[in-house]
Length: 168
Image (tube, rainbow, N blue to C red):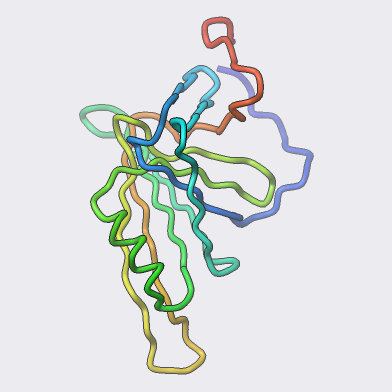
């Protein structure tokens, strides 16, 4: 077990984006456990999809639980998508019950991957229409999943692929 050194760079909060892809649209999905990194390449003709969220509303919650079957990592990503609109409702309808892989980038440039081919994320949503004019009108999306390993760090598919067997 190594030391955890002091962080000396910028450390600002907040998430910038959520991107998603259907599990069946993934061509290459490699996890490197020793570095907690992940390489994902979509199948030919497929790509990552982007979700626009109201600024400063994307939230990540994670929890580590000790269970009889071993450690479990629980992740929940919540985002508010503005305005009750047919295109949003249609996309949510298509996503309902489907298995998803997510990537989310924070304001420090760190990108994490949530979900695997074996244990993908799922989404639920609710439409919010408040009684007051100043309230939020739109959708609250909740992506959730439980995994046996922490969420991986995304590797650029055009960058070097780590040699998992030679990592310390």
